[in-house]
Length: 298
Image (tube, rainbow, N blue to C red; front, side, top):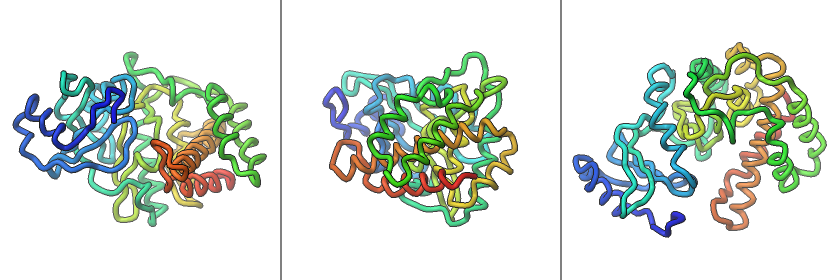
């Protein structure tokens, strides 16, 4: 349900298409499980409809509409590209977007078996993404600034789910990230929200990146944290070698952010175990595995 108590159904999606993009209304519509801020529906074989659901403002979808067509042509992995815009209406007073569909399976329902290939692929993708952002790019707020600006968020997650047997080690990793020097030079494009539900895998490796709502000019350490959050154990060093642009301070910040992201996954898993809205039980084990990788270092 949205905060306006409108249930998003296949019939609603079809009606909206009929009203605003009737040439697409005859395509098959299938719900895509998962999602939080937005709900996804497959549209035929090559498209998807992204419906604003829990996101309180339209900025995340509008950012995707504005910047993905600019970024997509130079990125080495498929990313969803907007093809049609849905405007708020009396029937559905929020934004929705028709985008290209990225085939494969979300990593939170799949796995990576070709670890070295995935490390090289992710590094290549981030090298292409992490270039200077233009002056009118969105400025990082929620995701993309120095870890010290997230101290309250980390503390809340730490108190909620940090395992007692490694709590001191987790705290040490975070404190080291907070103490690290800030990002030097110009701000670059960052995805900002790389976690297992926002990357697509096939044939045992990464095959696509999705959900660019947090795209902004910020600290690349937010994306570099994926070396531990996404990649299998033992591949972080290869990732950083292939990426080739991260100094010691960036790696320290990234490792602390990876610890925080791991705790977030664990909290979402805990919420799922408790039956709370938005909880995802299968994220708990993924978060603990990622935290173990963080604590082992690069």
